Image (cartoon, rainbow, N blue to C red; front, side, top):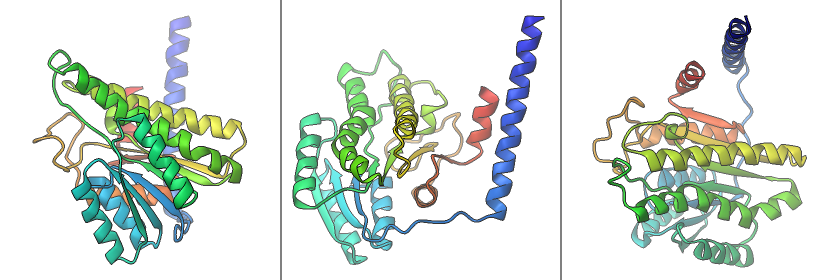
Length: 275
């Protein structure tokens, strides 16, 4: 009897969640969300030298934001900065290795001292190694955790105090569909992305508990993007996305203060079914 009851409860919860998702989608269709202006905001982007980081920097530049770009790759960073400046944006660049806490804290101090208060933090830097667990080397596993989750914590600890004082700001976590769904030959990567999703959810909850409703959070979870990170990535996570479709969804999510952005959005239902 108890088992039957539990099954019924789970079914009711699932149907309720499904109905809620459909209702939310219907409301969205009927009521276009209000978008916030980001012109003049100081936006800090990690991993800005290529791929999604570069595309996101360009989107902010088009909207007249002031930019602080971090990357470990000097050449890529310079190219991104030049493209953003062509769009009329003010750009400051820092060569930062996001796997090193001291470099993150050091660069953050310089930003705060010389440039000003970061109001939008986009933790985008990420690394991936695709191999079975036993073939993945120790240093590769450590690097994935250092960049894919610990760096998010260090940058947030550096820039959150001012956001807390002003009750204003936005923290963006670039995670992955691999933070919700697992895939073989990526055990360490999936683990680090699950951690990033957990960090976003816990931080969102904590800010709410502390009454800091002016600080927004957004987590981006795309399936694999064609950025050259993974060679021919075919996966059960579905088709490979192009950078521009992901950055469009990310920007929309930031401008409308959406907490979780799935690309493609049907992953939301897949997640409900899995649960």
